Every structure is written in C-alpha cells, then in structure tokens.
Amino acid sequence: MNNKNTSKQYTAVSLFSGIGGIDLGFEQAGFRITYQCEIDSFCRDILTQHWPDVPRSNNIKEVLADDVSTSDVWFGGFPCQDVSVARMGPRAGLRGQRSGLFHDFARLLAEARPRVFVIENVSGLLSSHGGSDFRCVIRTLAELGYCVGWRMLNSKDFGVPQSRSRVFLVGSYRDWRGPVEILFESERRRGYAAPGAAHGTRAVSPFKESVGDPRKGPVVQRLSYCLYACSARHTGTDWSRTYVSYPKGRVRRLTPIECERLQGFPEGWTQPITFDGNLDRIDTLRYQALGNAVTVPLARWIASRIRRYLASCEQGITQFTDRCLEVPETEVKASSKDQLAIDF
Image (cartoon, rainbow, N blue to C red; front, top):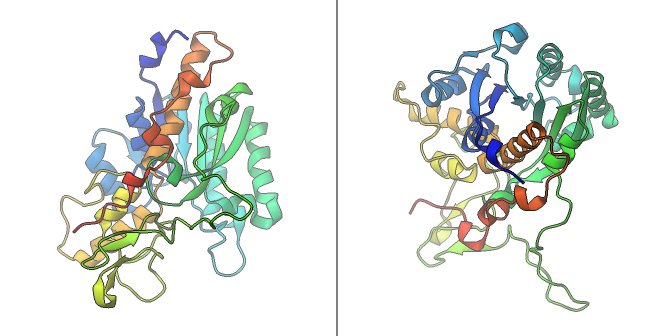
C-alpha cells in the first residue's frame, strides 16, 4: 500500500468530551481537534488547559452544525447513566435526560454528515430495555445514511492494566467497508491464553495475581478492576475494588495520578493549574472525571485505523491488509511489565 496520504492531518470534532481521553488518542494518531463540547465545568477547565485554542461549547442541545468546523470524524460518548447496569433500579434508557442526549448527537450528524463517526458507551447500552434502545440507535444512524458496526473492546488489551469493557460504534457515510476495516481484523492475532489440558492447573484470575513486596509493601493486583466515577472520601461503597495494600492490614485507595496511569493519560493531566486549595474537592472531581473517561491507548488504536481507512479511500483502494494496520505490540496487550505503576 502506498502510504503517501497517511501523513495527512485529518480533523475531528469532539462531543461529550469529558477530560479528552478520545481527543488525546486521536491527536496522538495524527488528527487535529477542531471543536469540543462538554457540560461539566471542571472537565472544560482541563480541556482548556490542554487545548487552549480549540473552540468549545457547554451544551450540545444548543450546538448547530454550522457552529462547528467541517471535519472528517465526529466522536463522543453520550452519557451512560440511564443505560448502565450499575444504576440502581429501572433504567430510563434513551428516554432519560442524560442518555437521551444521543438524539442530539444524531441531529448534528444529520446536519453535518461527517465521513466517519465514533460512539463509545457502556455495555449496558446493548441490553437497555431488552435491546430496544440499541436497535433505536442503530436504526437512527442507518436512516442517516451510515453503515454501522460495533464491537466490545477492553482497555486491558491496549497496554494498560485495567479491565474496562466498552462498546464502540463506528459508522462511515454510505460505505459498508468503513466499520469492517476500522473495527475488525481478517485474522486473529497471537493468543495470550496459556494452553489448557484436561487435568491441567486451574487458571488464576489476573485479578487475584498481585505484584509488589509482601513484607514491606505496597502490594497491588496485577490487573485493576474498572475505574468508576467516585469521590475522594471512602464511604464504604464508593471505592473501586482495586486497593493498594501494606503490612499489618493497612490499605489505601489509588491516587488520582495512579488512576491517570490506568487510563493512559500523562501524569498530572487532571490537576488544575489553579484551584481554591481544597484538595478533597479537587481529588473528588479528578476521580469522577477519570472514572468517566475513555482509555487513551484504546482511542489511539481506533483513530489510527480510521486514519488509514480515510487514506485508503482517497487513494481509491478498496481493501488493505492487516499488515498495514499493525500496531505496536505494547498497544495490543498489556504485558507483565505493564503492571499498575504504584507510587512508592
């Protein structure tokens, strides 16, 4: 494949931007972010720190396609609270005030018709209201002229030691090849599971494996459970199930910097330049924002696939091989050395 067009800088619009996990992944893959939309004031402050020159708004309901620069890709993860299986009680689904913002995303797609879109959400989107909400999403996007594919992807397979499964939907405007070439491989890659046997040793869950010094500490699980949006205070219910342990039964929660590492952000990404000195309040905002974020290396992988797909379209190529799409091994699977980096 002639790669002369892969150096072109494509553009992307970010909706429901959060603290910019998808944005950073796309930027690392060579895209330029042209617009952001985020309602949370703390997240907008973080976005402003890292993208000071990018125009942004705070309410997707007030955004018109004419307000946004024409861009190749639009992406975003509309709020998951109304479809999440972690929600206590019945799920409002797409009828909810937050997850229902998907319809505003679709409205903007209908007006702008970008070449490719990416939507990220929790796996509960697939089962909300017995699957009818997901059918509504697919039908709505298809009626706009998009060929749509979806795939469950886990952060632990992209170089970070965190088990975080999310569903990613990709659509390309009037081109069935887009979702196939972006989300899927024609052949499986190398396996990572140890070979089994009829009476072999039972596999040990990676959540049960630990690393560190058991005599002096700290000790932590080799693979972290999924980070959730929670507060800086420990109330008995708001912690992730991942702890850092020390001798004599002492434990602590992960620090914001450690959570940034688990999400693939540079250290200090969520530390505001100026704040009122209330560390508990700032840490709470950092934990909440990081728990809602998209893992950066996973976003970079998707962005790199999209970039090659767009380049292939411009060159008139109908197919391209997985060799052209190969990503570094460190991005595909977290190795043993990619264990949770704990502050000693």
